[in-house]
Length: 334
Figure 1 (tube, one colour):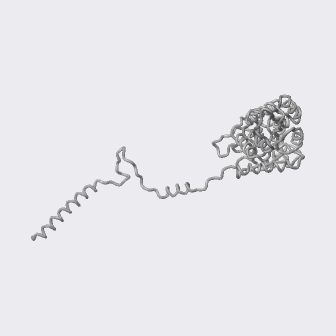
Figure 2: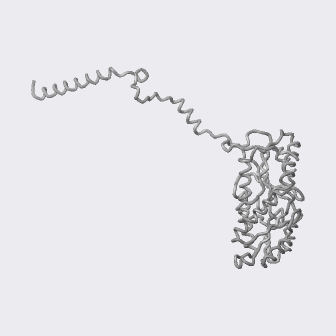
Figure 3: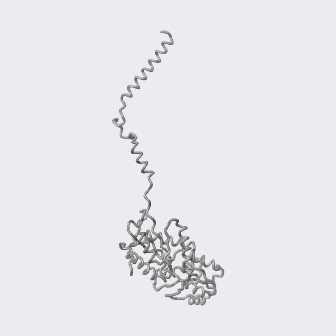
């Protein structure tokens, strides 16, 4: 055998030995589902194509549509002044801008259309959930009697089960659950920093300046109520407004049903050496009470709060609280 033939033979022998050893090792390998794995060995099951396809369809499937949010019904008192309804309409336009897609409607207790009874009857027929937000500043007869009575009447007209204002579950897609028609009454606008912000801004627009605070006072003019809780809320608003204005005394006054009147409050401040007395109008829209309060102002009188941005935010704040945190209580006529 020549030298090249010897080299080829050696190489062939080496390759043969390698192939033999590899074959011996492969002989010990079993199919995946038969080989016993060690306890710490990660499983890797065969790919199940149909199962993966099903998971993909579930992953990209269109989700079920969420239940619509409850309708926000802003409830105004009503006025014969033609500017009142237009003012409240502008306020609700601001609310819609802040919460696109929310169904927001206006209703009135009296004097203006749409009346609250008609609005609730329409919503009950549609099976809509409702949150009533009073455009009022304190609890009184309208909040404690008229609004619950309107809800009870709408329930009877629609033939729906008894309405309840129930605490909502914030974890649920629809915090009201499933029912034909439910409504709840939110708190009045009340003594809230957003309200005080709007009152102070309206005074500034009327010409209020922080100069010479020792000779300045403010009368906070509101509608008035015989309900003692209403007076307590208005007095609290007056305190907060005085703090906002740098410690200026703010005296509550009322257009009806309570004392003191605006002229009496002006005289009380004048007797204390406050010769520049402004009237802050704690009203949402123009009307008879606003006109009378402005006429009694010895210095300046602010416009009603109207479509002030802070008031729009406060309306939504009351709506959100009502739909999620109110305690259980039945709404019925009293």
